[in-house]
Length: 104
Image (cartoon, rainbow, N blue to C red; front, side, top):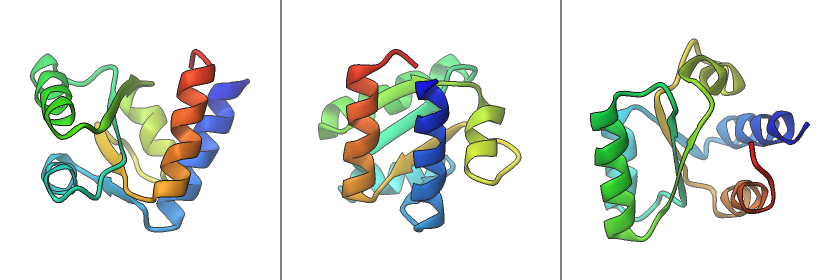
């Protein structure tokens, strides 16, 4: 299943130190142009989805709404993760390729 591969790659990015968690850290990575991919949990508040979708659109950063907060968190060794950004260019490109070729 491709979603398992995606989650494992996301965990690898986190272990490499290339993931920012939380609204403040993700917002800073977007504005600082270090975010390459922003992922928001499907069960996040509509306001959160709109805010990060608009920010990513303005700054030209790839945005995706995937999984639920507990699945994202588990992949990254946390209890939950509502919003995160992948800052590592190579790992972000691999994740984006999976997004483009598969329905997760």
